Each structure stands twice: as structure tokens, then as C-alpha cells.
Length: 117
Length: 115
Picture (cartoon, each protein chain N blue to C red):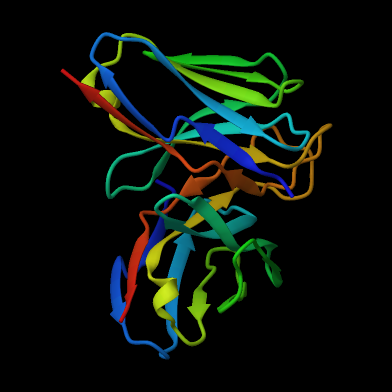
């Protein structure tokens, strides 16, 4: 069965360290997204991609970067982790981009809980 | 900038009662999604609403979309404990047949159903 996985599921790091969170999907979806979830804010979009070599900034992109070298993976990198980046991170994917689509329903990974000390 | 607001943010219900969660959004859109999240878990898709007047029902939950009012509702009928979770609405900015595939989420409504 197609799925979307994230690793690690839990991570503790120190301020200033570089951290990379992995996201891998086997849906063969063009669109991939990274969100962070914090109490009271719902989910906020960090970065997203409509396909290989395409990346775009979301609402809260400062301090984060992504790259898309293949369809299946969109790793999220925290260049220099800060305590304000302690959060739960969700990766999601959906089928299509800037075209008419019946759905564009997003499917979510299990999440990564990141703690920055 | 699209803003999506849910209310209430916290909802404590008795089993057997009915209630409605509201989702208001600020920009024209005809695509709205409802998700459920259990504590410590990921988001699970509940409903996809793709046009004005769309209504979807699954068990004790019914969702509707009024694009003219920029409002979606999630109605809970005869609540049971298993419905306790956080419910999110999310809006796709696209309209008129075009979708950007990018969602803006509401803050979430934490629903607790008591015996």
C-alpha cells in the first residue's frame, strides 16, 4: 500500500545544530508539503513543492530549507536549530499542482516531534 | 492573505447531544477539507467539499459548504465518546476550477465528549 513516512519520529537536538527531517512518499504524488503544528496555531505551512526541482516558501519558512531531487522525497533542514523551532512537524502530499483537479486532498505522515534544547 | 477561523476552539459535549463547529474563511474559495486528529496522531481526512452547497455525511458527522458566506459547518449528531478528537478545517485558495493544492488550516477545535 502507498504511504507517507517520516523519520525520525522523535528528535532532541541542541541550539545551533543543523537538523534534517526526512519525508518519503510512495503515492507518486507531485505535491509535497511541510507543516509545523503548535498549540493554538493549527498547522502552518513551512515549505512546499509542486514537483522535482521546485520549492516554494510557505507562511513560516525562516530558518528552514527544502530540496526536491526526486518525486518521493522532500527533506526539511533546519539550518541552525532554535528553541522556537521546537514543534511537531508533519509532511503531506497530494496528487496535483496548478491544474484543475477534483481533489488535491492532502495525505499526512505520522509526524516528527522535535525538541531543541 | 487567506485567514481561516474556527469556533469554538474548545467544545465539551455530553454524549447524545448535538453541536456544530464553524469554519469561516476570508478569501474566495470553493474547496474545503475537514480533518480529524487524535492525540499524538496524524491527521485523517474526513470530508472534501468542492462546491457551493456541498454536503457530505459520514456516521454522526455532517459537513457543509456555503461559498457565498465563506462558511463551512461540521455538525455532530448524538455525540459519542469516540468522536473526541481535534477537528481542523482547511481551505484551498484555488477557485473557478484552478487549485494551487496548498491548504490554509484553521486553529482546530478540541472536542471532548463526556458520558
